[in-house]
Structures are given as C-alpha cells and as structure tokens.
Length: 303
Image (cartoon, rainbow, N blue to C red; front, side):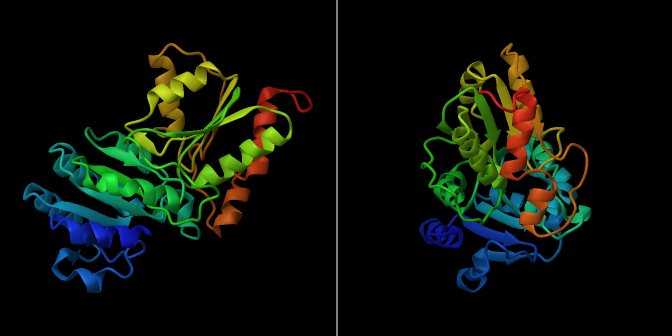
C-alpha cells in the first residue's frame, strides 16, 4: 500500500481523522473526491491551516495537514509553536519538497532549516523517512499516536527494504564497523551506497538510518559512537540545528570524544536543478562522500 492508500484505510476505520491542505496535493492527489467533508482545502493560507487543524484537534480529531515544507515550517511557525506545541495536540504536519526534494526551486522554496525549527518546539516530534517504503511502514503508528508530528514527506523508491517500525523514536542499523555513517531522509540512498563502496574497498562501515530526529535513538547512537574512529553525518540541511548539532549534543551529554565529518549545506542554499544533478553538484553523491571520508581518515590506500 502507498501513502494515500494507507490514509484512506485509516480514515475509513477512524472517524476522528481529517485531511487538510492549502492547495498542496503532492501526497494526496486522489483523496479529495473520496473524503468529502473530511477533506478541507483552506487555500494558500498556512497559518489558517494550522489554526483550523488545532481547533479540530481540541475537539478530539486527528488532523493530518499537508503543505509545502518551507511555508509550513516558517510562515506558520508561531502557530505551530503556540497552538500545537504548547497544547501538545496530536496534529500531524506533512511537509512536501523538503531538503533537496525542492529540486528546481530557489531559496524561497527550499526547506533546509525545517528540522532545526521543529526541534525547537517542545512536544513536537520529527519523522524523516528514507523513502516511500520507510514512510509507509511507519506512518500508521505515527498518525494514530497522540503526539504532534512534523513529517518530511518523501516518495522516492527504496534502495533496500526497511525493517518495520517497532517503536517511535527508534532507528535502524545496517552493517557494523568503525566508520560510522548517520543519516536520515532522502540522502539515505547515497549513504547506503557509500557504505557499500567503503566495504568493497576493505573498510568496515556501519550505517544508521535515524528515521526519527525527535525523539532520537540516543542509545543506538551512543553505542555506535563508542566503536567508531570517525562519525559521518549526512543531511540536506543547514549545519546549525540539524543532525550534526544533534550528534554533537549527544556526544557532549554522554562525555564522548568523536572524530566528526559533517556533510551538509553549512550555511548556504543549494543551486536549483534536477535532483541527481543537485546531489552530485553539492557533493552528496556516494563517490564524493567516499572521497571526503577517505581524506578525513588521512589514508587513501590503507584500511
């Protein structure tokens, strides 16, 4: 089942669920005609969208909100903070075109600070699946939870089959070794290819797909850091407030020494283009990540 089919099934089973959007149907193209009064399009008005969703949640509903990530997380930030976070309402915020998925759009339409913004809000949870398989295996539990969530929507095909979710806040681990790669979302595919490339060259690599940025699988991260000689974080996000910040916070909290390699956008927007072109041009392809890791290790020939 895909995302839309899962939503439709849940809606038929649970009358509390309501779908809302502001003229954004990227994830829900075929639902409007089927749901009737449980599908609400407010027009291009993200603040109103969040306000209406909050009111519905106060009346016992589970609103699932769909909008473009840059406008959902930035234009409506105060409404999310005060209406949803402060009151701990079970609104699910589904953001489209986050990170590199914005592709040909310029900086105004690039959500590359969304994780940092949503992390700031008490009670808010963050789910950033690697691909549509990861999304579909986790989304039902997330929607039916009594927690507010920001979800980085994604519909790319998986490079591998993911494990089914066991518990909200838990990541998944692949392989094992002293080169630790930690990532989430769209760039999991390139991270996975990087791990395979390292292994093919005789290195040992461990890859963590976090899935959740908040709550985060701190136990998994700490145990893996303790075995590592380098910790590589990969994300289509600014360096401040994202995965790199999270890993540094965890390391300090647990008195861990790490040898970090942060692969992110630092403090710049990316050049708009086709997705594969962006990934290569900005230095996020598996081959370029591999070279950065080898340079960081200071050993181009040995293990």
